[in-house]
Length: 347
Image (cartoon, rainbow, N blue to C red; front, side):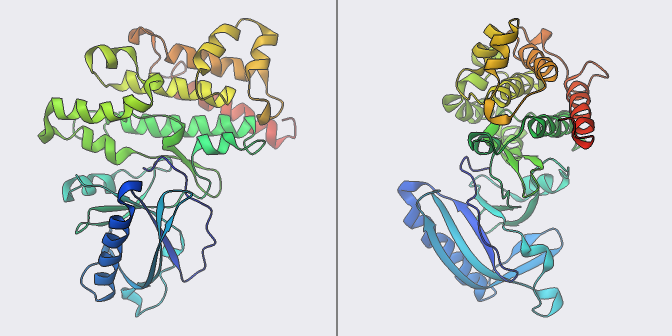
C-alpha cells in the first residue's frame, strides 16, 4: 500500500474518487497512462474486475495532487448489472495501487484473504496491473497518532489487538499452502484506519509477491530488502545477518510498532521504553501525553510485551497465537479491560 495517507475526500453518492500512487519523477507519464486506460474504459474496451462484479467508467477527470503525490481520478461508476444504476457498494473511495509484478494468480490469492482487519481488495485491472483497494478514510496509524489528541490511549489498545488478529490470520496458513504468509513490513505506515477507526493491515500484496516460489530465494530477499533500507529499526537482527524473514521477524516489527504506539515516538521508542520501564515516573513520562491519561498498569504490560517481542534472541520472542501467554491473548485481554472501563465510564 502507499506510504502516504489518503486525503479526506468529500464523496458524493454518484462519484467514486480513485487514488493511484505515482513516482513524482514520472507523474505526468503516470497521469497519461491512467487517462488512456480510463478513456478505453469509457469506450467499453476494459473494465475493473472485482469478484463477480464488472464496473465500467462513465465519466472521469484525472488530477495530480501535489500534497499527497497521488493521482486523483474522479469517475462516475455504473453497475452494468442494474442497467446504469449506481452500485451502492461503490460509494466508498478506494485506493488504486500500481503493481508491475502483479498477475492473475496473485490477484486470485489476494481475493481469498478476507479478514476484518486486512485491507480488502475491491478489484483488479489486469491490463494496466492496478490493484483497487477500499479507501481508509483515516489514513495510517502513524498519521493518526501524529495528530495531537486525535488518538486516545484506549483506542490505541484496541487497534493493537486488531492488528494482532490480522497478523495471526496471516501466520495461520490462510491459503492452505502449508506455510504462513510473512508480512515483513509491519509498521505504523502499513496499518490503516477506516472511517470508524477500525484497523486494517495493508501491504499483504507485497508479502505475497515476496513469497512467490517462482521468483526464487534471492529475488525474494532482494525484494524484502526494499523495506529495510528506509525502515531499519523494524528489522530483526537475523534478517540483517542471515536475510531470513519468518513469523518471529514479524513479531519483532510488531513489537517496535507497539512501543511506538505507546510513546508516539517513531525514531527510538525501543530505547526510550527500555530505559524507563522500571521507573514509575520515567515510564509515565515516556507515554504519549497526546493520548490522554493512560492506565499505567495496562500500558506497562503492553510495554513489557513490546520489549519481549523485540528481543535480539528470536527464541525468546513470544508466539502470536499461544493460549494465555501469546501476543494476541495478552492484547485481547488488555483491549477487553479497556472496553469494559470505557463502557462503564471509568476510562
